[in-house]
Length: 124
Image (cartoon, rainbow, N blue to C red; front, side, top):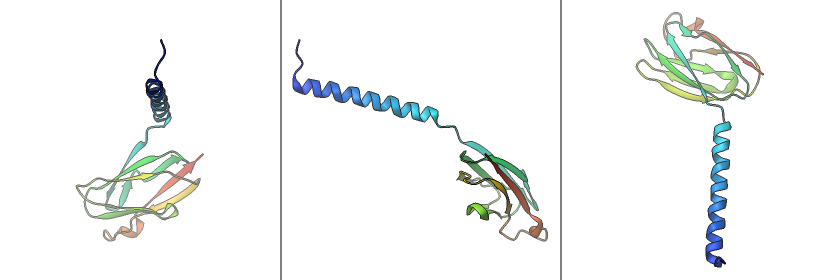
């Protein structure tokens, strides 16, 4: 039985669409799920105060404060966020260089503000 030209085109288009969908789903499955890291601020410290991340691995940083408005500033990666009581702030972050970096509070939060900092290690 011979297919008409229009039907052949429709069958070919459907096969191509199915192939594209399978390729997309395989690519989606290959993507690693982003790790969520919760960072809590309370005068005058971050918890956790030390983070270790893998270069090139995307993460979601979730920030919150337990008492007053604070900031999170990671200047070596040009990354910052407010940290507000009762709110969760989310920032997607992909470290693109290795080393040890300091993050700090950049919103004055009281007399211990100058000592409020933490450390990020990025490894291969």
